Length: 434
Image (cartoon, rainbow, N blue to C red):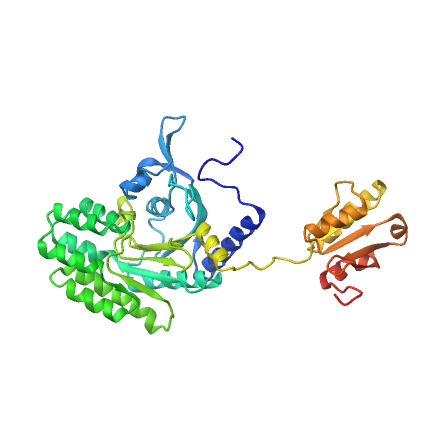
């Protein structure tokens, strides 16, 4: 009872600061790229969330009946909610629509490293364009986000789900059947995926091609394209998907964008709504994706919004925090000055309150000693909490319009006039040159 519910966690001050740092970066990037924020409910109708999320993910949703007898669920991802919003409230909005979201999501996963039942995401959706430059923008945004956090040596694994769906569809396998195979591929259950295709009526040639595609992976784009081109001959939709994939990657190359892609022809993602290019990003220190996304051209239509192409990316904030920790990336301090005002007697409390108000009005974070401790104990506590300056108010100093300013770093102090205090603190001009 005294611990958080399994899979949930308390974020301590350092972790909360890291999360808010990532959120700040996410918001700045949204502004730079022209993405407007929308806020959707944490609770949605179950049918909405279950529509295209996949059988495995349905089992991991937090589902319950509210007091009105409605079957509802906690959102496990943002995209379905965004698709609903666009279909119902932005159907006539001029295209493209660029939307940004940030918040907590919920899945009943088995808790493990980087996987929690409550987790945070930053989400970007580019809606209304089916052109390669839209996919390229999302990949570029992804690269800029990861680079902006200071992450190193990350790779972006890419594929085009239309290649696999084009082959399976060409064999007469239904969309539901394709989804089952994709979920097996997502879990890297290669043999299971091939066995499923066989049971669903795929030809011997198709089975051979699937086995061949699963083994095509690496950093060499030309080799990847060449091998996949050879494999998909005779499947027009797969050929078309590969052409689209080449256009996206070539566009970034021609623009001089440096992204370390890892190409994998058997790569799929568990969510059923993907129709085109898909991707995930990894750092060497973790074997879990820190972000992922792709194209979903049919999802908004399934909510009654007409045929509206879309592409997006979701960043796992908890996992990016873990990646930054693994790579020893520290966040910059928001403001180094931190002041503790210490009144030496109760009759000076009002003066202390007046003084911290002046400091705060000057943008200097300030606290009052509220524990009634002796001066030595108050200074010891200030040192432990990384306070940079202590302002000591005594009766003698007050009568002279002065205070004692102590520089905690070099443990020296000086008497200064109260009106000079904000400037002295901000420029840290200690008598010993600190």
